[in-house]
Image (cartoon, rainbow, N blue to C red):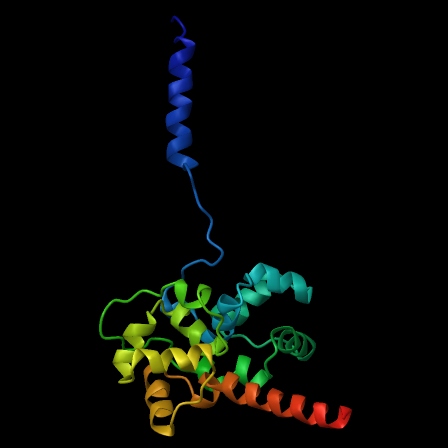
Amino acid sequence: MPNQPERHFIEAWSLINRKYLGKGVRVKRFRRPTRCQIRNRVLLAVLMVKDIKLSELAERLSVSSRSVSAWVYEGRLPGKANLEKVCRELGYPHHILFNPQVINNSPVICQQAPSRFMKRTITRSPVRNHILTGLCMVHDLSVTDVSHWIGVHPGTFRKWLHQATLPSPAFQEKTEQFFRIPKSVLFADCVLGEQQEVELEEYAELKK
């Protein structure tokens, strides 16, 4: 049987490569899991807003990527040594990053319509409430949509994100009910920021 011309072999391999290997594949920094796959939404929120991949965190902590994935997607708790390391690395106490109420509750929220997080939220102006901003990223929700759903002006909601302004107790409750996360966790950056400012002021007074 005569051999096929070389051109036909090249075309055949080209079709195989396109089918099985893909073309122009763009690897994202974070995979897009379904909501039911995320047990520790707060930990993932902090990582996303800080632009730290799970593999990068694993490398910084000298642990396996599988362990970090289990903390995020399965809600597992790290051992005491690793718990201290991850809290020190990300700058939050363990009751914020690994809050039992967050891990044990359903991660599904009741959004009223499809939404999409806009990257300009974090690129145009730095954010100070990393947890609340990161949760909008985790659930892929626009700032405008969330503000309408909880009944606050979008400009006010942006102040919560960019200036770490602590809202009134009533709006803290509404935000807690929407995200199904304790308000003490949602607005932890506001409280921690105030504590740091007080510490800096006290330190400045001592230096005088």
